[in-house]
Length: 77
Image (cartoon, rainbow, N blue to C red; front, side, top):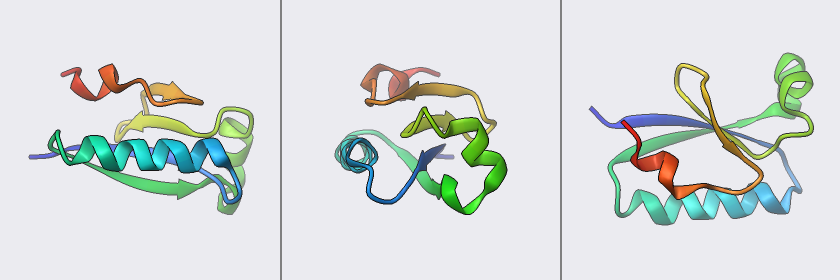
């Protein structure tokens, strides 16, 4: 089963765009999937991640990195 991540993002966010592109590049090398979630569509997520986007979490919600992608987190078990 592929590892799954969640990318908390928002429109017009250059760091969000950068992390999305970085994830797509790493996805060609590693076996994982990720879902993009726009925090501005979810008030509770906006409150939680407003100053931290982009934020990458596990599917269980564990924060892995924010701001810039740390590729090492993609290779952790």
